Length: 601
Image 1 (cartoon, rainbow, N blue to C red):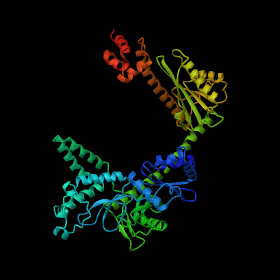
Image 2 (image 1 turned 45 degrees about the vertical axis):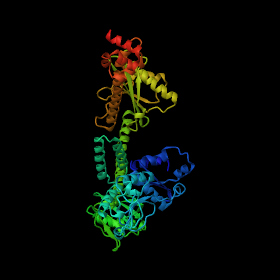
Image 3 (image 1 turned 135 degrees about the vertical axis):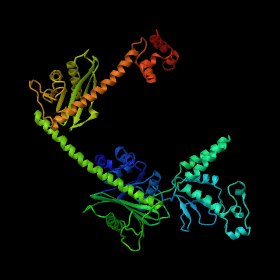
Image 4 (image 1 turned 135 degrees about the horizontal axis):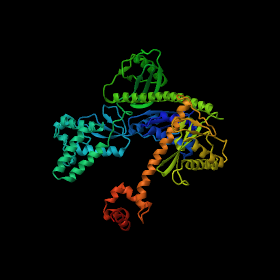
């Protein structure tokens, strides 16, 4: 895929976190990567020169790009890892290890322990995570243990063992890190209540714990116990930046399929995701053309799911869907989630369907843009015929003068290519050789400067040049064209100020285009654009010139000092009211004395 080919694909890639996949011409998966911003990351492969030869070779083989949108960068990281392990693309194998990300487990036992593990055992324990940053997760676990006393021993705290007094409290109890359930000093109900707080934290629902910590911090601050309050503040910051609940990796779900749909009167978009062992390993979206408007969404879902199940060889016995629908096997379970992890999966599927639909609409809008292009071509064709131009005027330039009571005379030139503004080619001119008000001489100067430069650089000349201002300015412009020996190499016409009447050199009667014709509308648009561009520049220059000239008239004060004063104090009127000491702070004592004496005599 070349850079030009990618430029067509790029607008369809969203600015969202997610995972991208590159395929070659035979449909082989080349590479899987993650991104905080999918469009920026994928664009970097095509818009930047790659130092790594392996990357250069890979990019040369890319023919198709697919992507899956996730809610967070954290989920993109995990989805990338699981997809690489499952598919093992050619260009990922040497770049990615096969490590397993750790979880925090709440052990299935009486007075459950909470600890790290990389091994998921199906023993009824609760696994939360996975974590992409071990450091951040350990920091979180330490914060939990500092605020919620839990046991970390491996004793068998059965009811019988505790009642027999088989255990004695250890150092952790005396340090305040455990409440001594081994001696019956903490009830199972109280322990489980504290454990519920941990579940909230590990699932990202930290609001309850944060409220308690903030209240305690404010209480400590009110008692002037600032060191303890700062310790709590650091814990609050650690909790606020933590979020562990993952949509794309969830060991509780095992093997399950997810499907969602968006539809309108003519089409429907269906997204499918397949999870194995709680990890998303495949995702795909298709469009369905409706035969009749009244077609039921449930029927389309059933049809699409049968297609996806066969294509991806799914063996899942549970389908998460937004509505009731027919399943391909009677033994399968249909889940329509209302809350929890399954609802988050369905929402993620729906988000990917939405991105796909928006891309379809963008492409439809491009078709409308193609219609607009036809209209532009029609306007250019009409203009060519009306002006008897030897070639289609795909490159048009228009000039206009602007001055204010003879001060700051400037000019502007706008450029239209294929009937559209080419703003990178717009030019401003400060009049250099003309004194006072002389629009004709000013026009002669700027036309000469413009086309002398193009001639020297060997740049292609426009097919049509429009001089805004009528016969006088047209004659002045032609003088420069003849001096540059460019007569006959482009068509130059004058444009009357009000009626958009077009004058040819030497003609007594102007040409009047039909008022509502595309050619007339294009000429009017070009004229309005050159007026806007020139007036904006003139106002900016006039404003700067009026202010700076007044300061620069002070003997011993130059442009640099005047600029420093204006940047700091914004106006001359403000500068008039300043003390010498205030001026000294900006421009130094000697210059401050000069400015102060000028305004205060």
